[in-house]
Image (cartoon, rainbow, N blue to C red; front, top):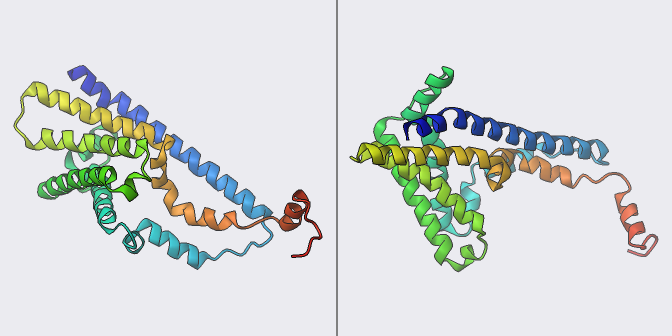
Length: 234
């Protein structure tokens, strides 16, 4: 068990993390490559940068937008995402691993902040899962991966919380810690290949959306010719 844990924390973690970085970099490169091709061919090259910036800010910090409907679920989702980002990055144990591996570190959360943020993340993720199951409007829009991702994201939080705060035997601790690390590695590995990739694409979605409407010159004529409607009255 000790060897597996060291392997999961060391070589496997580094491999999964590199795959995640390369996968996300590939997605960004392909998106920006496609965007510049669209912009180069566009007839109208004017971009509403102020509107794009405003909409991007709303997407990154969606407080107003998400409360227009499904208020309860949106509230749970926002709090869940806050914990999901802050706890793994600023947990003291995680920072210590980074320092021992690559020699870099940053300020950590105080213990009680980490404790309550982790507990809150578990609670809100569980409530989101229950809502997906019982609320028809949300259940009808949910796919299998939506449930699987919530469960997978819950796993390292639950196992880490138990290992850090409960009095358990050494064998149980090692097993739960192995599950904790392996689930984290799996999340890193799967990120570029699933919907979670939106974590890096969201800030650029409004630019891509604006560019999508920048049709090349004479596009309307080509469409009419394709539909055999060229010269037809409007």
